[in-house]
Length: 182
Image (cartoon, rainbow, N blue to C red; front, top):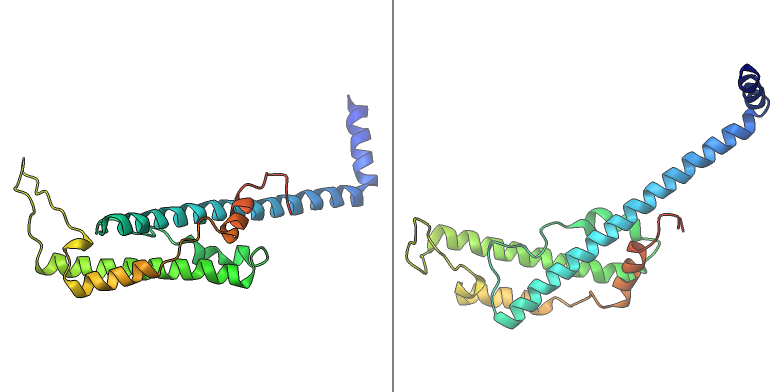
């Protein structure tokens, strides 16, 4: 048993450069894999955010109202992770996604401002109190015409991007396997 340990120790001492190279290579691999995993996770989250926001806009265009209790972009991962996709997307692709996020965030701000104003000024229960709980239907359709018009204008300016080649590139990034570093 001692001879095996001595042999291993002797091998390691005589090949210190090789062992350092192997350990260094493994550390670099783990670093690159971590970056790739982070990029893949960010791409998945961005895809989900775009899909969700587009669905909310579609619902508005169909039914004419946003609920004040929900945001189009509960989180905004694009602006914090845009740097991860600079090499994978063209400038026009980045601009398209940035414009979508910017428009959706602006619409969220307008809806929040209108909801805050409505809460402070004119909230009225739409149905009677039942079981001690006030049932309220508060939506953008209940707003005054200037606010409704602004929400309508912003909503109509949001372009759907979920089924574009740009988002297909993000889909490919999100589906890369753990062993695919590049």
